[in-house]
Length: 245
Length: 240
Image (cartoon, rainbow over the protein chains, first blue to last red):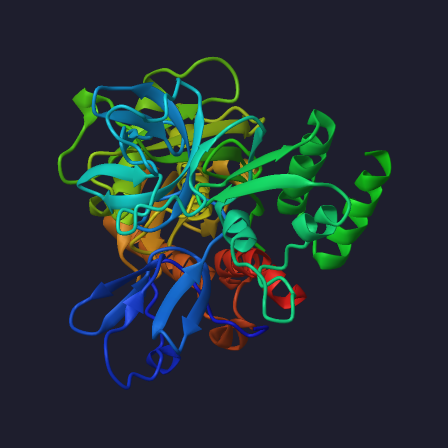
C-alpha cells in the first residue's frame, strides 16, 4: 500500500476510492463522516484504507485518546465499587465505565469476585454511546463463558499508543507472519514464559515468573511502539534484551 | 517554506505539536475528549478550554483575550457535537518571542497565527474530529502600503498595520484581527493575499506545478507536513 490516499480534515473521499457496492451497506470507520445524500468527508488527517470485502473504509491514525466502541477488548482499572457495579477507568480523566458486580463467568450473588480499588480487569465493551455511560463486562453475556476475560492478578501494566495496541491484536496469518508487523511477543516467547493481555485502550498487561522478565517484555513493547521499530529492528532489540535476562 | 514543525513531542498528552515561525515558537498540547466540570458542561456539544502561557511570567488579561480569540476559531473548526458533555483542553505554551520591542497591539496580533496553527496541528495529532483544515497567516502593511506575508521582526516594528487572518481550505474566513492604521481598500487587499496564502498551504500536490513560478509562500507546507505524518503512521504496513 505504498500509494494510499492521504486525506486532510474536511476533504471529500474521492468516489472512485469507494468500494464497489454490490449489495448491503457501506461501513464508515473512524475519521470519516457522512453528509447526506452521498458525501463522505474526512474528520482527521490520515491514510485512507478500504476493505472491499466488508465494504468498509476508515482513516488510519496513530495517536489520540481511545474512544470506546462496542465489542472492543480493554484493560480497565477498578476505581471504586458500588452495590450494583464497579466503576472502572479506561483512559485517564474520562467518566468511569461501569462493570456489573455479576458480569463475570459463574458469578452469582453469593460467589463473585471481590475487586479492590486499583485492580485490573480484562473486559469487553458491551455498550458505548456518546450520550450514555460506557458499560463493560467480563464474560460473554450470550454464552456466559469468560473467553479469556476476567480479573488480572499480578503482573504489570504498560502504556502503548492505541494504534500499536491494535497492531498487537491483529494476530497472525495462516503461515504465521504477524499481520500487524509486531514480532516482539513471538520472539520473546521462544525463550521466556509469560502471559500477556492487550487492551484496545492502549494498555498492555504482562505477567511472568519474575519482575525482571516482566519488565523486559513490557519495555520491549514500549520501545517498539515509541521508536516505530520494524520487524528486523524488533528482532535485534529482543536478542539484545534476552542476553541479559 | 513554512514554519518548522514537530509532531507529538509530548508523550503524556493526547495530541501535541511544536511550531516555530520566524517570530514565535509555540508548544501546543491537546487533551480530549475528557470529563468536564459540571459548570462548564454543555448538553449537546464539547466545551473547549484554551490555556495560553507566555514565554515568561504568568498570563494576564492579554492572554485571556488571546484565549477567547483562539477558542472562537477552534470552536468553528472542531466538530463539537460529536463529543457532547465533554471537554477538549488545549494548552499553548509560548517558548520564544521576538527580541525587538514591539507595540503592544502589534505584539498581540502577531502571535495569533502561530497560536492558531499550533493548536490546529495538535488537534490533528490528537485525532479529534475536525470540520476543515485551517491555516492562519500574519500580514504587515508598511508605510508605503507594501503588504508582506510572514513579516520579519524589523518589518513588524516599522509597519503601519498588522493583520492576523485564518482561512479554511475552502477559503472561509475564521479569524480576522487587525491593529494599526488602515482603510478598507488595504484590508481587502490584505484579505485577498491572506486567503491565497492559506489555500496554497493546503493545495493539492498536482496544483503545485502551476504555482512553481509563484511566490515562495505558495508552497503547500501544511499539506506536506500532514501527509508526511500520516505516511509515517502507516509505515509499518509496508514493513510486513
